[in-house]
Length: 148
Image (tube, rainbow, N blue to C red):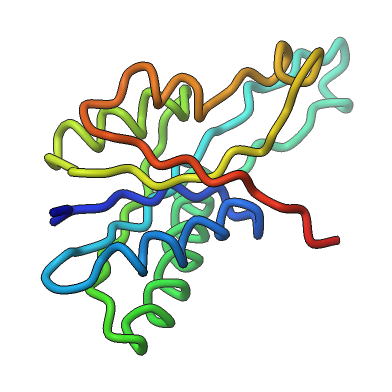
């Protein structure tokens, strides 16, 4: 039923909880794409140049994201899962997920929610909610459980 499953990750163990669900759904010829959006923080204005915060190197952050995804993909391949990876740079994470799903004709997006509510949700927004509203395909949301 699902040939291409997109699994957006943010580098956290909470987000990785979506992987077993996607792996279970990918029996047969289905392929999973592990996907990460690298979001660069805006530089902070400092009244004095000596107070400036060094900006991370964009290429280095993309390489780190790709290495993270490749490590997860290798583990899934050992279980017989067909896996691709993709890391992209974008300002708006939800838009990047939706755009990638649309451009690559994804059949399903499997992702976790972090369960924010109240002020935290207002301040940080809800990537999952935005993806559900705008995705070109069904979205399976997994309620992440904090194991700590």
